[in-house]
Image (tube, rainbow, N blue to C red):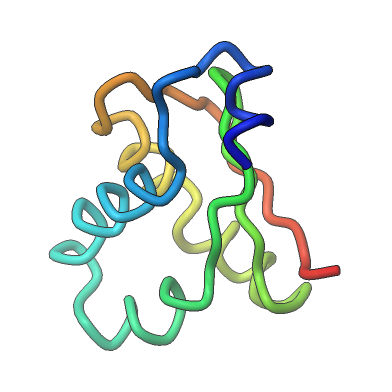
Length: 94
């Protein structure tokens, strides 16, 4: 994962740390049950200046998150120092 980040000109960004910071921003806005149900299963796969790619368990999950929480996730990423994606892509596990 770090190699991908390095290629995207974000050399000092740790995806795990970024994801924890994103969840810290989202959590008080959605509540513990929503975090546990909809956000705990997610994995930040890659991150660039334009886009965050998040792995979801299945297609329904990605579609539902896209309809209900995409804007909140973009806002959360933009509150993390050094990160400013303008789009979120949901991808399924391989």
